[in-house]
Every structure is written in C-alpha cells, then in structure tokens.
Amino acid sequence: MRYVSTRGQAAPRDFEGVLLAGLAEDGGLFMPETWPQLSAADLAALRGMPYADLAAHVIGLFTGGTIAQADLLAMCRDAYGRFDHKAVVPMVQLDNRVFALELFHGPTLAFKDMALQLLGRLFDHVLAKRGQRITIVGATSGDTGSAAIEACRDRAAVDIVILHPENRTSEVQRRQMTTVLSPNVANIALKGSFDDCQDAVKAMFNDAAFRGEMSLAAVNSINWARIAAQIPYYIYAALQLGAPERKVAFSVPSGNFGNVLAAYAAHRMGIPVERFIIGANRNDILARFLASNDMSMKPVEPSLSPSMDIQVSSNFERLLFELLGRDAAATADQMNRFRAEGRMPVPDAAWQKARAQFVGFTLDDAGTLTEMRRLHAEAAGYIADPHTAVGTAAAAAHLPADPAVPVIVASTAHPAKFPDAVREALGITPPLPAHLADLYEREERFTVLGNDLEQVEGFVRAQARRNR
Image (cartoon, rainbow, N blue to C red; front, side):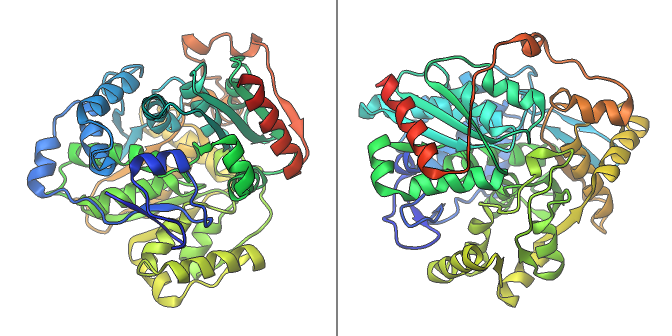
C-alpha cells in the first residue's frame, strides 16, 4: 500500500511515512494509491467482531505491512478499551428509519477520540522503532484539540501545540485543552477563525526549513491516518443494519469534510451506500457547492455548532481528486485558484458526479434548537448536542425514497460539551461525566497570539526546544 499526493509533486510514501508527514510537501493531501476491497464474504466475516478487532482488521488494510497486525490489534484494544461503553460506538434508534451512531464515548466526549486515541499509540510505536522525536501542530474548531492532547499528553517522543480560535469554542471544549498542564502540551488561542488556525498550520508545513527543524507532524484530518482510523465505525454500523445485503445512508454534520470522507472511503471499500447527507450550519460552503456548484469562501460566522464553523474544508481536496479522475495537475490548479480567488469553479462533470452521491442541508441556530427539542420530545427524551441535531435534521429532510434504507447519523459529541445550547433548547444542563466533573475548577494555561505566522512559529520553536 502506497500513498500519493493529490497534487502529484510529492514522492509516494508508505503508511508510516504518511503518518509522520501529515501534509505532503507540495501542499497536497495523501491518498491511498488504490482502495482496498472487502468482498461480501469479507464483510460477513467482520460482522459480530468486537469493535477494536474490526478496527484493527480494516486499518490493517491501509498499513501495508509496515505495522505488524498483532501490534495494531493490541493498540486498538488498548485505545478503545478506555471508552465508557462496551460497544465503543453504540447505535440508538431515533425513529423507524433513523439511527444515531454515538461516537462520543471516548475520554474527551467527541468523535475525534475514535481516531486520535489510536493515533497517539501509532506515533509512539513508530517513533520508538525509528528513534525519532516529533513536534505535532494542529488546528481545532473545538474537538480535535482536546482529543489530540489527551492522546499525546506525557508521551516521551512528542511535543504538541494546538491552535484554537480565541473565544470561538465552547467553554468545555476550551477547558478540555487548556487544563492539561503536561510539559509536552501547549495551547495557542489565535485571534481569528478556525480557518486562520488551519491556514497557520498549513503554512508551517509548507515552510520546508521550519518543518525540518521541528520534525513537524499533523493530527488534523489532513493526516491520512486520521481518516483510516475513522473508516471502521462506518463499516461497523452498516454491518449492524444488514450491509452488504442492505443499503444504508449516512448523515454527517460536517465542517472539515474528514468525517464524511471516511464514510465515502467505507463505500469505496465495499459498503453499499444509497447517499451521503452533509449537514451544515450557517457556514454552508459544502451545501452551497452541492446545490449550485457554488464553492466560494465567505466570512466564518460563529454558531451554536462551533466545530462546523469552517469555510475551507481541507478534506474536500481528497474528494475533488476522486471527482477529477485522480488528475493531480487539475486538482492542484483548482486548489490554487480557490486560494487565490476565493472560489473554486469545479468542472460541471465533476460537480454532477458529486451530486449523484452527496446531498447538502443547511440549518441555522433557531432550527438547531427546534430540532434538539423535537428529538427530546419524540425520541424518548434523547438529548442531542447541536452538531448531532444538524445531522438528524438533515437525515429527516433527505430520507432515501426506498423505505428499506436506514439512515445512520454520526452523533459527533456528548451534549455536555455544549451546555449553553442544551440549556437554551431544553432548559436543562447535561452533567459532565465523573472524570470531568471538576473541569470548571481546574487551572488553565494558554497563550493568546495574533494571526501572525512568525509569532506562531516562534512559539512552537520555543515549546519544542524547551522539551528537547
């Protein structure tokens, strides 16, 4: 298994190389050279496996022998053994056709734990084998940061610096990051939006001298290993509802497109998917693209679902690469024009390919609160966070015509991460789990910086040197 850049100018790598590199040197994202295939018999053999065992099998198809299968299985069992539900990713039936796939039972209460708890162990394994040290830099709109910090705190060969947009996450999201006082962890509150944070991270990776000096690695979903670790839960859920003999649909509240891309990857591997439903809040670039081929940037607006407050969806580049027939030169041209002009004129044939499989849906804050109330009233008191509510509303708006096709909604965060929104919708405050009960009393540590690359690089350099 080799990986190629979506922009075609970076040398191919194996899985370990992609894990440590994150972003390709040409600014592109790594993709598997070919999609592994799971036959009907292969999928039948996976049905009924414990989640960690299924995950190790599926991820093993992407490692290409660089990691021994026994080691990968041990890492998966260790990572998912920390989750607070024996099923790891339980499904809750909301009505006769819609199911919530709960991805928030990990230590930081968000779907990012599904990949990052494993990624921390993969980094340890590979770095120990190579005798290397890395500096992880990442951008977060709320959940990636805390999941990455929890996975990488106190690891001997890793320093981690996370950028979040100042005052644009929930208080719980911020405190989950900033109250981790481990010496290898640092947080930057950047004056700007998530897109500004993401741009700073990409700029650091594109600064070849700095990248080499710091041995940069990525935990954002620009790192293919993140996507590989998210594919298993879509396969697991589809098998629970009768795949491959029965088609399913996936509804995913999406900001950076990584979560829905993992669902797409599961489909490319053999899961029959009727459609992918993408839920968006007022930052609706993906929905506008699917509706009218309008891939144009607008200012990021804060919302009740801050993890989706994104206008530049990094992982869309991976889908674009597929839609353009894996034409790396055409992909690079489109992405460069998007950055230069603020809009991407996707060729009509590629847009029509996307519309054949994907549909978008937009929900504003008022609609999100209404949907949270509806779920609580009609689904046996189910309490959804605002992101999940966008996903369930999107599912209801775009039910497949065939009544036999169920819709699996990615329930991406525990409602306690967004107490203000839940209180506004339902008049109740969801309690934090016991291991986070004192979160509001813990000491915080973070540094506020302007949106200036030189300042950010200086901070990262000082953090890494302090630990080296």
